[in-house]
Image 1 (cartoon, rainbow, N blue to C red):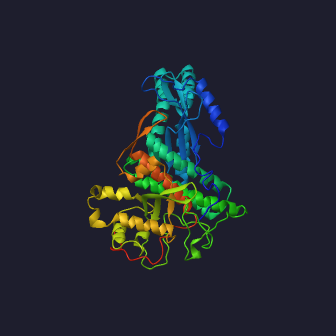
Image 2: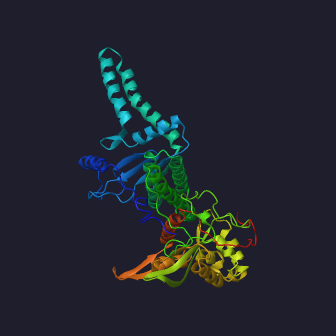
Image 3: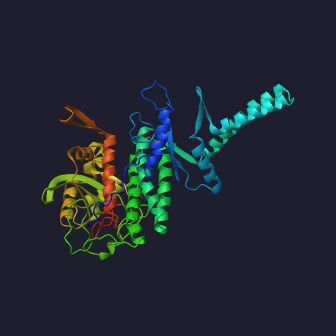
Length: 473
């Protein structure tokens, strides 16, 4: 299986402030610098000056670095509910604008609306006093008017806030920034296309953003890492699909694909195509939300979970090392895999997993009391050796990877383990932990999404029935 050159170019770009309008960032940053609001190592508790970028799905608050460079990541990200009514959408747009603009009066910052009401109220009070209205009455009226506006704005903001999910934690913002970058690409594609598939991808992307922001509001990134990886895989798959759809909608030549079984396929970063059927090659991949396992056997399971395992390196081409492989869970049911060990490992692998989840073999070891209960499940060494032979014989699809030493060590370690290595450039030992392991799995998921842009990984022919059908579904 091959894909167009650089299939993810333009998809995984980093989200930067006003990416399509760089002049707006410079104008707003210059205004902040002139106002003296940029924080340059101020005392603790100093609030940074934020520049708000509004989007159709929410808003992003960026801090202003003192050196004049672009901020690396947002200070805050807010996502609107995707099922808002017309009235709610109007209110949410007001919320995004009103919270971003405040007028500083000495140590106090007030809303623009409050200041706009206070000035005319004060002027009206002066005129009324000159025309004989009692001073006490007008003083109370002039003081109550801005307070009433402030109270009303706070009340309305609280009501509208029920339809917004706001993320501020550094790790959560960093993750949501990547999803927002992918969604921005979907929105740009939809702006130039009238295809239903593209508009539907934008809707799904918005739902993913909102649900992810809601998840990150209630949990830290580590405790929900599996679900976050699955969501990012879906977003990347949507972006890849859109890249295939939009050129066709514009009348361009469709990307060249080489999915025929008689064309030699490399065992590089993309899996070999199945030999048994041409029906697997489709221009658009099914959504990750749907079960998309091949339907060649009535006994094939519908759960699409993936097994990631490291193995002894081999070299399918010059200067090309493959040291880690990823296969569909159903490949464990292949008759050429040691049985019933493969079926038992399949049951353990798919039990309680989410659709599209990538499960390293080391995670199973961790769940089996550090490997103490492996004998009760099966001979994992023989099973993985059989899977590797299937891959080399092209009897199933696989995502073949050349992971760097640290990334491979993280995949081979448990979900809570740490890897230490000497960094000669820095002249000291460096430690990588669970967050780095999650990032490795995210990167593997991105490659998997690109590889599955045509269809799902083929687990092989003649698969056996699971030892416990339906377990973990």
